[in-house]
Length: 360
Image (cartoon, rainbow, N blue to C red):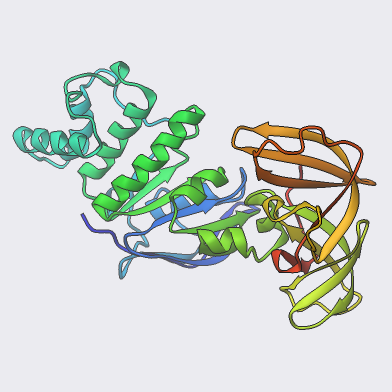
């Protein structure tokens, strides 16, 4: 199996008066694990359906490899789709489920049986070939669905939130399994999710969407460390957000006046004095000021300590504003109370033009 690239060129998708996907262009490279990440209703599944052929874009075109998909239905495209509900046939054995697409294509029984057994071995289900899906765990059913999709040798495998029905431990396990299967096969994976953890863990690159608009397409590191918009900064991972107005600025840094006082960060949007702005800093890049010189420091009232096993979140408040410090669980700050001084370095914060953020 070999993956092909996918190109969306100026696609728009309208349903009557509603525009589900605004004009967008997107390139997914052959053989990469690409995720489309966003909240419910943002248009990510609509893009998946345009790629698969279940709907045609109102405007624009979809290419797989060098070929336009205009006018080609799902059965004629080099794609396979895994739905959230998996849609396995309960009265068929697992190998028969895997071979179903091959049977529809007229492949003889011996050949399709051998291929089904090969694919079930690929996804780690040796010994389960003649069982039915009802005899499997949720994660095993997931792998049968993947094997069935791979049986028709797609160039592009489309996955529509396939892990959302699994419990946390199983989701974490299946993330690693999916990534390993993608690496072994070389098929282009396009993964739809609203779960940032899934996207960050598995993807080579991510497209973040909001209200039908692709806000940013980048590597997982850049999406997390260098978000380009307030929405991406607050949708992907936790961020402390401070609003204010720029009081000083140059090409590298900007200072904004906030409820915490004057705070300095990287001037990502080349803002000028007087503009409304937001400063973002990740909780893991913040800390308590204990004799360590930080570029930005202020007093805040300690509220609570949330233990997450290996990590601890410390919550502070200054007026109406909340501030979070995220640190390794080293057994410190168990008796923290009252007023404390917290802060961060300017290099770890970014100042952006004010915009939409994710509501808490």
